[in-house]
Length: 110
Length: 197
Image 1 (tube, rainbow over the protein chains, first blue to last red):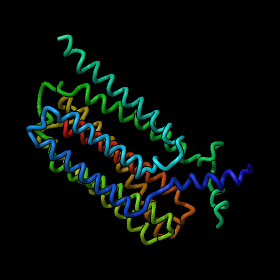
Image 2 (tube, chains in turn red, brown):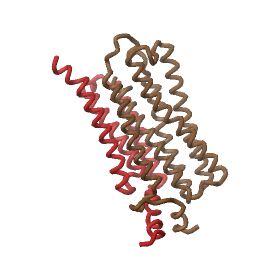
Image 3 (cartoon, each protein chain N blue to C red):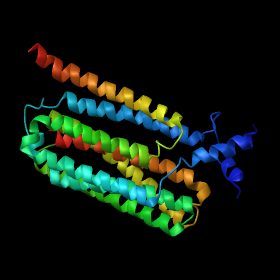
Image 4 (cartoon, helix red, strand yellow):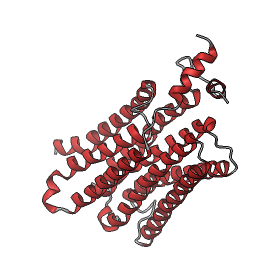
């Protein structure tokens, strides 16, 4: 395959795949609704015991939707997904490990 | 300009992917580690302040909810601007790039108001552990938004001058990746710092 053929083929990847304008408005609407639900959950006292799992789940859904549809990772080359998820996974591991070490383990020891 | 000619304007890796895009995704991966370190610091020192103000004393959820919504909508404007550039619609691209600048500027305005209000309430970067970790984390995020607004302004001027043709869509796409990344970092900050006090 010649250089120009590779380049031309890559140009297809370059586009990254994208949805229609209506699709983007729908995603934005869903993101807005989830944000409203997050704030509502924060103010509902009855949900206080389950606040953390509910909010973390909703936040993860928003995060995933922006990455998949606005950043086009769902439609783009898997190489980008691997590169990004590598950094994200290590970062998440660091946060979880440090919080466990400094916040929860000392409490368990009493 | 043919597709092949357009494609040859960019450099490509052995995988056939544009080098700029591979490099930028790698940069975003490293940015995950950068913000993870700041978020970790905030979480580790959470509740460690011995003197006020404490998070519940100063954090304004209704105000921050509005600024969060503004930043989310700026991401929509960004993706619509990219769509405009790809279609070769200069007016549409310019309009949505202007919206990204306005919404990003509005978010920064909210942050400046919030920081000023907190300082008046007695929360400073050196006052207690909460203040230090909060201002460093949200300050670095605000700095990223500021860089993004400047970047969008450059693209907006290019668009007005007719220099953002479909062949230049990769430039807007990469700027968009940066802007959306700033958005997803705020999604995490809003939940961990503001809602899970």
